[in-house]
Length: 159
Image (cartoon, rainbow, N blue to C red; front, side, top):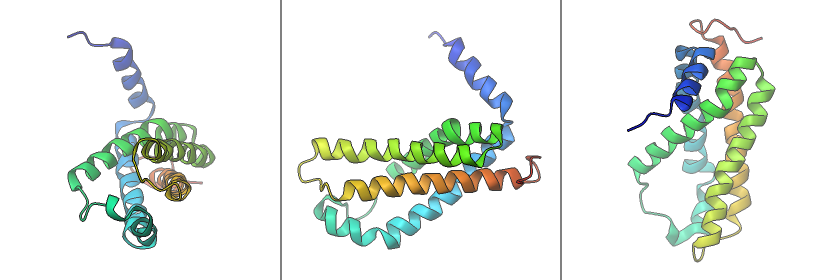
């Protein structure tokens, strides 16, 4: 097996620019923030919308391993593409814009693919879910950058 040295070098450089502890802190804080927001949305606020529109498409109980895998991958992408660059630049604005766009792309992928290939997938849920994903990811990104910069072991306090 041949290891792609360019990819490995890129990963090492990224972890060099944002210390490992800052990176791990961003991942964990984002997980807590996004998890709390999504739990509130899926458990209370948005639940009636999904029940009414998705009906029989919803499983009686969530597939917890699949959900945890989604969150792990989503948070990795969010940390890599949005949080690390925002922490490097010290910009909450960069976190807001990057988070919004990352959420939009991810949630659009899920919603529009479902709309394209699933019989009976309701178009009415698409803009609601895409708006939720965009806004929740934006809020998570901004809060994470502010909180991580305030952590004593990170060394860059929030302004």
